[in-house]
Amino acid sequence: MSTTVERLRASLASVYGSATAGEILERLLPRIEEVRAKRVTSPHTDASSMSQQTQSMRTLPDQREVILITYGDQIQEEGKPPLRTLCEVLESTVSDVCSGVHILPFYPYTSDDGFSVVDYRQVDPALGDWEEIRRLGRRFRLMFDAVINHISASSPWFQAFLRGEAPYTEYFITVDPSVDLSSVVRPRTSPLLTPFATVDGVKYVWTTFSADQVDLNYRSPVLLYEILDLLLFYVEQGAQRIRLDAVGFLWKEIGTSCIHLPQTHALIQAMRAMLDLAAPDVLLITETNVPHLENISYFGDGYNEAQMVYNFTLPPLTLYTFHKQDATLLSEWAASLSTPSEQTTFFNFMASHDGIGVRPLEGVLRREEIDALVERTLRHGGLVSYRAAPDGSQVPYELNIVYFDALNDPNADEPLALQVDRFLASQAILLGLAGVPGIYVHSLFGSRNWREGVTLTGQNRTINRRKFRRNELETLLNDPTSLPHQVFTRYHRLIATRTGEPAFHPNAPQQIVHIDPAIFAFVRTRLDSSRRVLCLHNVADHEIQIRIDVSALGLRPGKRLVDLISGRELSLYGAQLEMSLPPYGVYWLGDEIGMA
Image (cartoon, one colour):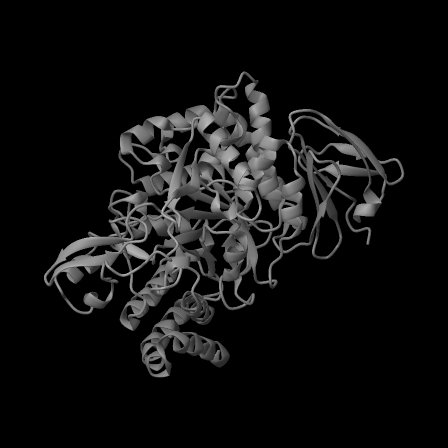
C-alpha cells in the first residue's frame, strides 16, 4: 500500500509541489481508508441478488464483460421512474449476455443531454434516485460518467463564482480576451471564452464545449480534492467503471494546445493511484476523441493510468471498410494494435450517444477519403458536425447518424435482410476483436435516423438519441417481421457466442490474417492455448470463395471446424478449408478443444 501512496504523492507533487501534495494527502488518505474499509470481496451493494455471471467476474475483464451504453430514461412508461423501467427491460432482454451498463450522465443538467451537470452528487429526479441506481447495480456492473472537465453554468459552484464567493472563485478559469489562444485545440466551433457578469464586473471564462459548459480550474488544489472525493463518492454509490469524459482537456496552459498536457496525465495517474488504494476493482476508462497515438497515451505505462481507452478509430474505419468493400486498411490498422500491459485493454465500440468521430482517422485515411465518408453520410440522411481548425476554418469533427443507416442507405432498393446482414457483420467485428465491447442501445435494436428529433432540438446529435416507449419497444421485439426483432435476436446470439468462448478474452492473443481483400479475418487464441478461433467477416455485397491452410494459422488440423455462431460443422481436407462466405457472411470457426 505504501508504494501506491508514494505513487499518489508523486503524481500530486508533479503538479502542485511537495508541500501542497502533502496537504491534499492529509485530507485524502482518511477518505480513501473510509471507502476501502466499507468494501468487501464483492464490490456490489448486494451480491446475493446479482446474476451468477456477474458475481463470478473479477477485477480485470474477461470475455464475459460486455457493456450496454444507454441513457437513464432510454425506455419510458407511465407511472414509473425511467431508471426502474430501464432495469426491468434490461433484466428481461440482456441480463444473460451483458455484464455491465454504462448509464450516460444521470445527474441534473441544463444542456447537452446530460453532459452539462448541475450537481454531480444527485440523480436527476426525472429519472429516479440513488436507490434506482443501486437496484440496477445489483444486476449489472455499472459505469458512471465523471464529467469533470466542465460543469453547468447554472450549477451552484458557478453561481457562487459569479457572486465572488470563496473557494468557488478559484474553481474556474478567466482569461483576458486579448490573449492569443490560437494554439488551443478546439473540438467545437463555439467561442473558447464566454463573457459572464460577475460581482466584480464582466469576466471572460474558459468554455471548451459551449457557453453552458464551464471548464473547471485544476490549478486549484481545493477543486482537485473535490473531484477526487467525487470519484470516491461514485465508488460508494456502486460505480465499477468510471468514464473520464473529455479528460484530455483538463489542464490549460496558455501558449500550448491545452490537450494531453503532462499535468493532465499526472492528474489521471493520481486518480488511478487513489482508486488502486480505495477500490482496486474499479477501472478507469478515458474518453479522448483524438488520433490513435494520442488516444493510447492514456494507458500510461500500462499500470499507472487508465485500464481501458475508447478505441475511437474502430467505428469510422469499419464504416469506411464496408463502403469500400475492402478490409485491407482495417486489417493493417488492427494488426498494429497493442496494449502496454495485461492490465490494459481497448474499449471497443461502433456507435455511441455522440456521432462517429473522424479525427481518429487522421493519419489513417487521406483527406479525400474522409470527405467521401462525409458525403455518404449526408446521402444516407445523416448530418455532420464541425470543429474550428487552428487557421480558423471549419473541418468535420463527427458524423451524426445511427450506425445502421451509416452502413445502409435508407433510400436504396435492396432487401432489408441484406441490410441486417451488413449491419450485424460490423457488430460481429466489434464483438470478436481483442478488447471489451461497448454496445449502444440503438445498435442493439437496429434503430434508424431520428431526423424529427433534430428538428425538435436543433442539435445534430439528437439523430441517434431517440427514446423508447416500453410498450412500443416490447411490441416490436415480439414481432418477427420488425427490424428491431431481427437485429436484436441475432445480436443477442452473437453476444452469447462471444461471452461463452474464452478465446475472446480481452487479453487473449489476436493475429490478423490476410485471406482476401473483402474478408476481415483474425485468429483469437485462448490464454491457455487450448483452442483457436478463426473469425471471418465478409465486408462485401457478393459471395467470396476461400481456400486456406488452417494449420498455417495455428489451428489444429482435425477433421472439422465448428462455427461457434450457428453450430455448423465444416469438414477439412487435411488442413485445407474450402468454403464460400455469402454477402456479409460471418463465421467464427473453432478448432477442437484440448488438443495441445
